[in-house]
Amino acid sequence: MFIKRNRTQHHDKSYRSILLVQGKRVPAKRPPGRPAAGAPPRKTVVVHETLANLSRLPAALVDLIEGFCQGSLPETTATPSARAGAPAAAPTVQVGPCYGLLAGLHALARELGIVRAVGEATRIQRLALYLVYARLAFQGSRLAAARASEDHAVRAVLEVGAFDEDDLYAALEYLAAHQRQIETALAPKAAPVAVFLYDVTSVYFAGADNELAAFGYHRDGKRGKKQMVAGLLTDGVGEPLAIQLYAGNTSDPPTFLDAVEQLKVRFGTEEIAVVGDRGMIKALGQAAVGEANFRYMTALTDPQVRKLLQTGVIYQTRLRR
Image (cartoon, rainbow, N blue to C red; front, top):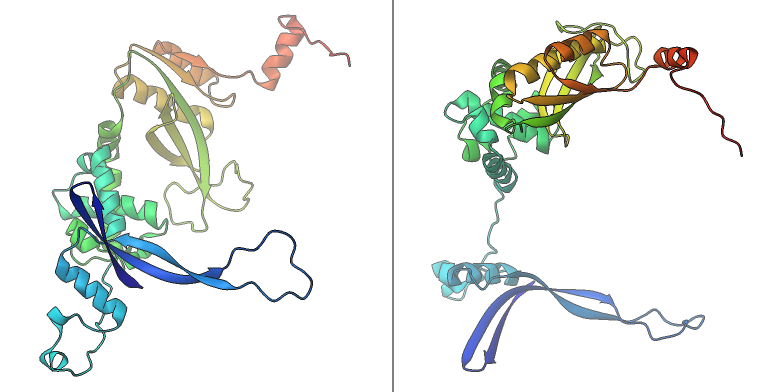
């Protein structure tokens, strides 16, 4: 690598640029046609690739970068022995914790309102924010997040000091205790007429020490594993609004009752249409939706279709080829 200084003149103005350039050898352009058998390999040429524009950096910093490229200290930072003509030692480069990833996530979370919803006044709130960022960046356990903090500038960005996985579990308990408050702060203001989507899923795990762990209907076919059931409520475009965990042996319809109650209490909409699959909105759900003066959309189950066919409400037709 080397520093390239350019000066150009355009009309009455003079322009100056300082570029960090790297030279690399690439194969030369091949002449047209297929190469003859036994022809020597193609020649190579050196091309210059611009890595960065350093024009806005201070002159002292540019000199330092140039000295590093040349393998010696620049004149402004050389030791007295180097100024006297002694060989200068190459500068030592030390890499500290990564700053950009967490700083970028923190800025984005502030813009989206996540920082305001979770809070940042106390240490436990800032650790809770780190849990959110760690879930996006590393997608591991609390122990993995604590270990990742050794390579990332968590202390500088969030000012949380030293911490371990036990501190992160305490932050997780804080998030669980304030879940409803945080969801309400993040939820967009519902329109007078709105559509909401709701569905459930299950998550299995190997351990058994969990108050919600139970054997139930395994949607992913993992028999012999205890699970938890999660109900997710979103707006009409799929943006998450609320999530609720249930025991692993909970069927779909009872969870739908909670979703209707959340819509009725937490969102001041005048008219709501709820969309759920055919196993979700059954007798209990239909009664709850009607009591709340909501509308719903679902699909017919197989027994319902057969009953309608038997009573002649709908007719089955065969397509001819």
